[in-house]
Image 1 (cartoon, rainbow, N blue to C red):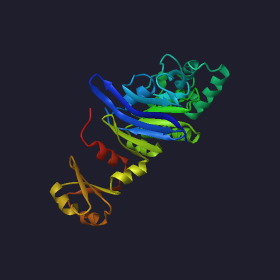
Image 2: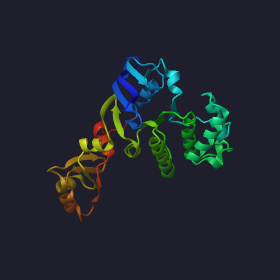
Image 3: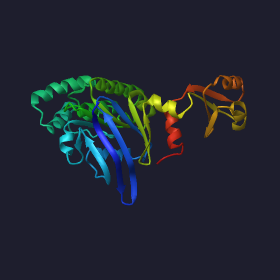
Length: 302
């Protein structure tokens, strides 16, 4: 597949501070590519560079084979962008927000009206077309922002934390719409720090921190590569827990009042925990969050 986005050896300085340090990524056509990282990892800076909104210090950036920032205007005509924060115009209705945004692309009126009806149906806002923005819930606003990003029928859709702050129902609805876009052949670049979102949507995923790539692969590949397949989360007296489950192939990590036992076979350790007073435990398969925390650390970030 041809590369829709190609970033090679990207460096970005703010004065003496380097916030992106040799980052490279290639996004093939028709996939959902995720960039996952903690706050301050360089995700937003990389995105601003990609959109031609911020100069970079060195490296190469191209979209659809055209250089950024030189071809920024031509490239943006083929993109749709869902920003991190909703920036809908509160002075206009739902439909008017779409019509005004379509005007930036010079689309014929007949095309706009047909596309408007299609998109409002796609995000389940047809009955809200004439409503002011102030009457919409947070989930509705996010769905409208996605519809707006699609008004020019883009080949590449960039989503910057599209479901932050939404309730589970709204989040799942948006995930369904994003999967439908990928099935239509659209290319998605998803910036997120939600593990479940990345695991559910992404064909390929890059984990970044401190402006550098830590690893890349499918969610399944990353889990298999970095963590044991089974996890027991145990709360209780730490010394007693270590006596019960420690040793062998159990890799123990302590976070607050919880001990995490990472293992290839949890059966014997589960037997030793059964009936132990004062202990509570949860047995689960390893997931992307385990990978993320192993690679980026468990300390708090600002």
